[in-house]
Image (cartoon, rainbow, N blue to C red):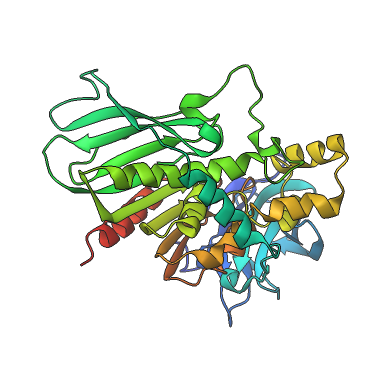
Length: 415
């Protein structure tokens, strides 16, 4: 008799682990692979035998996301020809994210991440005593820089049409550095809410799609996007690491505020309805901007970068290895290394955020891993929500776009 689970709404396709047999496996996506007490993580595998092979050995390894081994399960599976069965493995873990490896004998079947009680992950802020003073000084320096806004109409009718007007904006930020961005305004005169898009690391600049109900501004921070210097490397993450006052992100974080300054200066913008979003580095920028500037009404960061450096380096290799290579090159001690990075660690800004937040997490992300996303999120004290996408890696997808759009619109138009 076939034993078939009813919980098969979210499943992977049958995969054959060994070309010499016809045992096939389907990993059931129980609880979207994120579990909450009193439920324990459960790995369910549907095994199908389409030929006469008597049995196979099924192996499951479970490790922490920091690569420490936790569990090893091995089970001989015997399924009659043409039949299928379910094998289940359940185990106990602490709040966090884990790597599951499934194999038939030594033939890999699937590797994937699961989570358990992500909002209970504890990664305390490690900011220095002068953290607030450091950023107040940076903001005071920024305030002394005349932005010298330049709004240049883009006359290309492909982008500048009856529905909207498109502009290139140039302005001065911290240290007199010029930054730029694309600015899209509905053609119909009026006062509109505004949405700022903060860009990912080394993202190519894009023209905003253009809404008929809001203004958009896509910011290129110093040296990135529209301002990328092709004669220099793109390792901004390492620039100025030897001195926190000259570290790249001190200026870049001030660029985020300057973008809000620009938006707030425009007569066509309703200053009470400014929101922001961004992915990866842009997600980190979105969180930092909300922490440093209370003019944002709501934010939607996706797979945020630059968070929880001490744990981040234990979980992923790239691009964190750039920083560690730079540390060795300049002879920086671990103490000074982590002390400097603590001034730019998103989790240390989280407690300053006062607006509503919706965060996107890609459960299979190996660049900005879920653990580091929640390290900051769990320290946010304002209204907050999160969406975990079990099959997404370092991306968001259409489902996130729709969720983000609904969230931002709800706050833009809230009375």
